Length: 335
Image: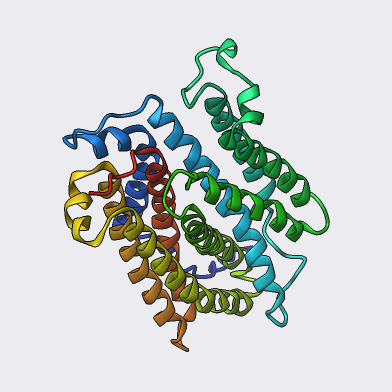
């Protein structure tokens, strides 16, 4: 009996991602990883400002803390958006990263608390720690609030109502806002209020986009329209978040840099250089966000908004690292 040759079905070749996009992703990820290591010395070079001991360690710990805050806040935010989309599969959500992020944030908060317990110096051995400083000083009490809030957020993330983690996450944001503006500065409550809004909107923007993109990836075959709808809801809220971030960031800058000195301090101080790098990168993020929003309005291929949105979330990761650097370098002197 002659052999019968059955033609195999034709399979379209898989599209490979452009090399340029892959290189850009690798560069941004490497940059975010190098900021805690090289950022402080690069920002301080030639400014005449002294680098405080442990600046690199503090930058790294705050990068982890801010990233953990963004991941948890974003999952709570994205879950709320998904519940507003008719037909979205509530039982088909991606595996939560919030519990792991919470414990990572807890470890980072413990490291920062240990630095406070050693008089704002990186401890070299357990004998350097003075636990009494955590209860007797304002910074110490705020550090303890953050540690306990991350533990509470980790426990909430494991319950049937993970959205309850919003309460301890709000406590972390409030503690960071108070820590950034000690009572010795002018109008500390005004500064804390600006930082509270800025940090909240930033965490919702960066973390929300990451969580929404994970939803899109999970639903790309089973519920693609629902995923695009969630991204559309996020884009509308993100426009408001971006406006709030811009206003509060500008006001906070003018509080620390009088208008007549901004141009000089942006290039001649470490704080100004880190701020300038952050502003330029946020501008890139805004362009990517506008491109993604434009593609969402196209009826022929709305899923194409995923590409610029993915670049946006990677760039926001670098912005998070730059924000951590801003908390570690010396605050500019008001001339």
